[in-house]
Image 1 (cartoon, rainbow, N blue to C red):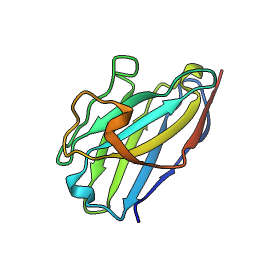
Image 2: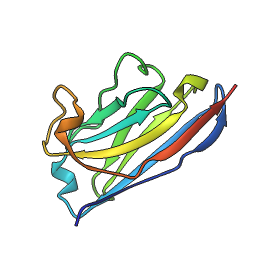
Image 3: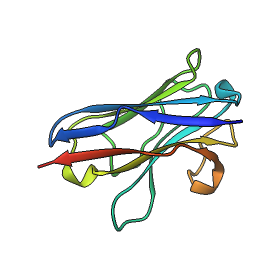
Length: 125
């Protein structure tokens, strides 16, 4: 059974940093692209990072480029989302997800088969 578990969320002041971690078990982690998504209240879910199975660095959308980075440690089956210079608009539930593919292509929700429960990130102004 595949399990995806996020950790590291919480409340931080604007301008602060936070690192989310995600562990995945029950799958071939080192063959799987991993993504981070978020859903803010009243908004649709959006992707914030994706890292291919053998990447040192992943991809992030323009909305968070320069502030968010992602990395992975295949030996530990962990993927990270490092967030810098957080803004109140980054407040959301953040989800980690495992893709059915090795590589990050055009990142779409439908490419990710296994999702974590989500973890709250709140940025206070």
